Amino acid sequence: MNAFIKAVEVRWADLDPNFHLRHSVYYDYGAYCRVCFLEQHGLTSLFMAKNHIGPILFREEAVFRREVRLGDKITIDLKLLRARADHARWTIQHNIYRNEDTLAAVVTVEGAWIDTIQRKLTIPIESASAVFEKMPKAEKFEWITK
Image (cartoon, helix red, strand yellow):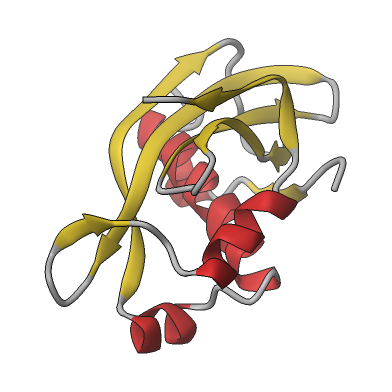
């Protein structure tokens, strides 16, 4: 897959007192995009609950480039930046654009899979790993070896 892009609308409730997008909304946009990708590829919340797995985040970082205001058209992409071969650990990056061509922010998350019964990190089941194989890879994608 070459690209996965989701569009969202800026809501009044997403704005801060300066009338631009609140910082936490950028993280929400990234989460929305990731969940949409997983859902569209069969990793629904019901599937994960039945299989006792779930994604968790260790780190989430946003680098803000340009402000976003009410009325701007927003698109979010998703790219796998780094991953272990078994997809037990991974880094996903989102570019958030306003009005199609202006990079507004870059959100990067580092995560892994957890066994929801044992409450311990785990290697994902084969079908979850297969979904990560389908994820668009960043130009500078790298395999994690440790």
